[in-house]
Length: 314
Image (cartoon, rainbow, N blue to C red):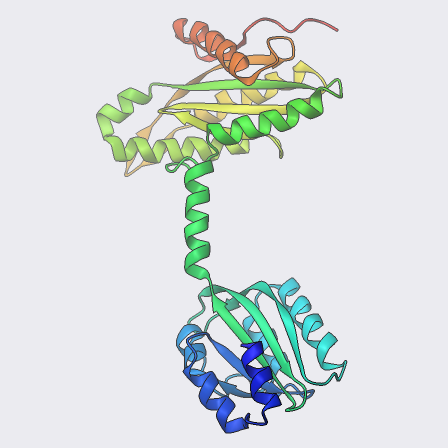
């Protein structure tokens, strides 16, 4: 675009009418405004089709930024980029680098666009282009969720657990901080699944996920690792005594009844815990040992929690 406009301007072949015809035919949403006043004089057909705004909806660039940019930092950055070039009063053609912004459409939906700009100083106009990348961003977000989230509950998955563990293990090796790994298995979940059906079971798992997140600190991680099994990573512990209140909260919260389609569902939870670095220095080993503690607790059919082995007193 910039190269074409430069060639046309040098040849003296670029009139406002020519520019109007060229821009209206382009498939990329764009507008032009006067310099330095910032009066919007034109929206092409792709702009109206994509964002839903007719010509005249925003008299000035400031009106457009204030009305269509829902994020404050996008408003500030766009104004800064344009003003730096507008106020410079340069000659020829200047270009504004691409940046990603969110745009509030006329129907109140949000679309993501890559915003670029070209300033034709000799003609006294600025052209803003908005390459709609919403579909690409939606696809990227979907792939990210598949890679890092449990699709049923929205909790993190094993990959996130491993990544966060590695991050904190590196930090922990340089400090005296400990970490705990908790494995949680629901007691009585199969009976509810059999009695109320799998849809009710799924709803119960989503409720459990939400309640587990309420039991931990900011910075702790709750994961679903399969079926009715969950894992919690508690990093940055100064004392293993911190773990017991968390396990007690988990047990108390998960025992609370859940109403599903008019039916009351009640489950319990058994929890096994292992401690880094006492019980191992690798996540796989700590998970294995937490699972052994969980198995012992499950075999007693009493719920509650226990360590793989009691923490060694300092």
